[in-house]
Image 1 (cartoon, rainbow, N blue to C red):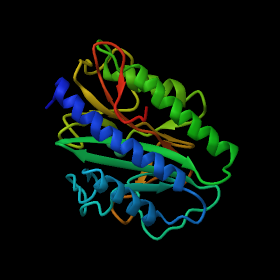
Image 2 (image 1 turned 180 degrees about the vertical axis):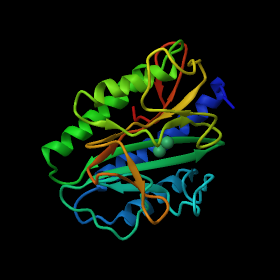
Image 3 (image 1 turned 90 degrees about the vertical axis):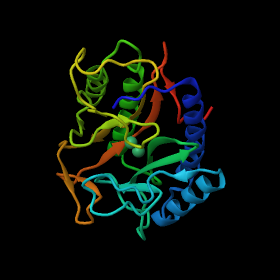
Image 4 (image 1 turned 45 degrees about the vertical axis):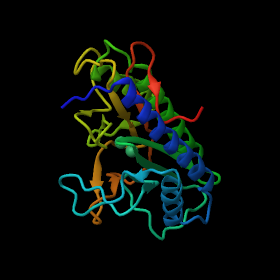
Length: 255
Ligand code: MG
Ligand code: MG
């Protein structure tokens, strides 16, 4: 079901988004060589709870999941695309770390992710990160009434593919609001002018996953962690964005 948000709903989502932006800004700074992933998770949960909110991911169990997600962030390193479980792994110089987090506050979720280079990273890894960030910016630019889902997917492909990278098909962007995954999936690839029409009040978690090599994916034995089929790098950025009557509003940005 498609849920359109009222002005009051959006106010709540802004509050959740603000908390999440603060958490991700802090974790970004902590992601240095030697840092343990579980420590990032612990700090995220602490910050969320201190702000009177709840981590959206902890104990989340979508249909088909083997068990509830055990942490407040997803931490996915290098060839891991999404849904990595933060454990005892230590970050190393050159790692490409994706931190994905969700905050539930006053009845609404916000969902956002960043990719961070750990210490000095390769030029190729930096290019992948830069292009993925450009993909998200291009996607957000399409978040306007009258545009369609296909316009968003096509905008992502138009940035990623000429750069020599691929767009993950298996996992998508999605509606977000009273539910973490609410109402619809939105592919990060598509054809302009095709698909559902955007309307003011729609809130979307836009999250292109861009691979260095092929777009195929594989699920690891832990039942959660998704990796690239060819073992090459992957990057992701995500913002929760609202369709307004004109320009897109990013709900998970600090400023
Ligand atoms: Mg997310
Ligand atoms: Mg999401």
